Image (cartoon, rainbow, N blue to C red):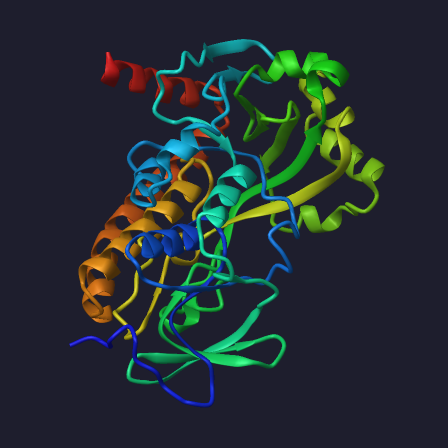
Length: 392
């Protein structure tokens, strides 16, 4: 028999039957699905408040994963009311800004776009007040027997839990309880930038990006971008480079950082280079890491992972948020289905988690090589042509 969800370990230390570490999309989806089934969970997040930092750009939410999770959370109707019309449009350009493929959003696609912040707010608003404990940074977690874990926070306080769920991202504090794996650099570095109020202030860039997603790629580098629901453009300059390249740039000096990034695109079209020169505000460096494809672990009583903590991968399959959400939904449904038998619930959940994550991680790695390719954008165009042939 597994550990009952309601068991406690000590009368002196606070005990939570289910503790979720991380209030990202996966952790919140889990908490919401549990709430739908009448099961309480406590969510701990290191941010001081829900608005402590920006939540990133647009997400395309897939029918078979993210949208399935929202149905399990009984939030799909509310989600559809918040999607970004036109966001499924796409353009593929070469380094000379020639448009080689263009797709319009006619409203029939299966991957509607939503602002990440809007989606997170929807999930947060669906939870009972007090579910998320903000300003609760986990510094350590250890087993104390019988599937129970003790978790220590940065303020020195601690609690125990009968089920510890690591939904705490790439550098998870929970993962070491299950696995010695750590993320490694994929060879791709991003510099993120924004062009605000694009139609008015940056009309050329607005025309270049179009209504949805932009791929402008070649020579193992490129510009990836999308139009945000607030009318801004969010752009990722991206290239294959040594991991140390970004650390050699002083991003507190925006002018110097801009010059360093522009130097990587010296022979690209003026229209594309202007996405860098005309950007508003600071630029944000980001190295792209991934866990090994096929990352998995042996069953350890009372603890599991979801989302990036379980299967961090590069973003080139567009699946990260979708996987985190369906992980959370699957785990929540499994816990409800197995009526308090944690070990049976976790075994059933991980049986679905591992093969799905492995297949998607492989797809993400293939996507990276398709986009960042000496012959780009040809391999990307060929990939979409193959999709066309499959659906014809």
